[in-house]
Image (cartoon, rainbow, N blue to C red; front, top):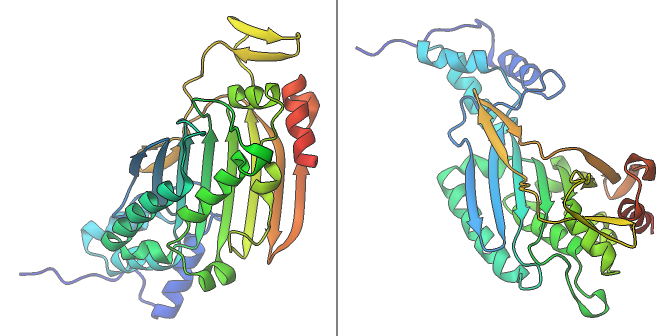
Length: 304
């Protein structure tokens, strides 16, 4: 005989939904939880990139665990979260060869992966808050393009556009929030400076309306140089590691909590916040954070 579901809150559904909303915002909790979600962490190994996708919520894990005791509110809360209060964390590690990377091919493959995932989990199309971290650490160092027709910054922005195609454009504009974080490996930054090539920060930060979200924060960071030994120096200015560090824009889940894996100290280059296509905030890094020609040149291009 089936057990009759029990009620935890003997209140009207409208009030229960207000309780669910209060419990589920990042304003009331800072733990990125995967408890109760049918999809925990998905990894796609593509040519040139490694992409991890992880939906998370900031809701009450305790309330969700009551589902095993057949409390009606636990299952109702789970459904409410899937429809209203999820964030999608995406980590991209670009460690392939940027000079043989074909954006259109990558777009087709990623869209196919995303569509298959959304077919299995239709609620993914309802997610409106995206947090994308891109670690830029190409094996061949610097993108070589005549007259800078292609830039690394443009590539990162285009990848973000592809990774957010599940959201309808109207929903993006009205309720969408995007945090796009570019993280440069020190080696990639140093090689770009040595080659006298611009990274393309203008293409990364602009146009402000390019990704379609009503609220956006785009930020660029550079990992600190942390290899004082076995390094080459050019003109005594640019420390270049003798080998690449094992850096990844990777996620891990421990005890139901999603965390970004740490890659060491990092310095802000620039951050811009955009609301309804208008820039409403900007912050810049400080050349004194690390010193040296690499950070100074990167900051100069950002301020360009």
